Image (cartoon, rainbow, N blue to C red; front, top):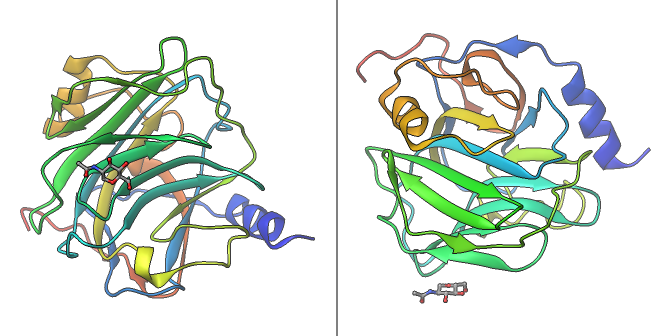
Length: 223
Ligand SMILES: *[C@@H]1O[C@H](CO)[C@@H](O)[C@H](O)[C@H]1NC(C)=O
């Protein structure tokens, strides 16, 4: 059995967690710490909205992986802060780059939206949309891969590079198989009521931590 399949099977056995008020805390750069997420729907996607709150004080001149979804041979959906501080989305091939406020210690609420029909892609920071760019019109994101936070899997899931690892906090991760309206994205940012994430929902997330990732046992309120 491949490493890929073993990891995929192991995450399927994980139960759902209510993470509201909690976070994944990646304390230091490693090539070994990561969180595997188990989606509620297969990632066979012609559109998506991915949201998460991210805090990091890593220096600009460093690549930072924010979200990685990889099938056996392709990086299907990767979100980065690049070496030069721009943010990028890659869908198994070329990427699009967005100049946004860089990550900081207080946390940014970030969403990425993409739809296949037009290829229109946007980043949303604290509820505000960036300009739109076009990425891979007509493309479909393929299912049966693995979603990882904290590391960029280059081939199999054990080939990580600590120089690309994530250090900081990730929380409030939600993903939908459609592009949400601006008003719903505002609600997600403001933590008002909104539709359950049908792929990932922070209030019922199936995940497995490996290495040095801390999840506080009690929710932090106002902290
Ligand atoms: C930042 O880096 C990316 C990836 O290397 C590159 O494509 C992009 O043009 C750069 N952007 C700026 C503003 O330098």
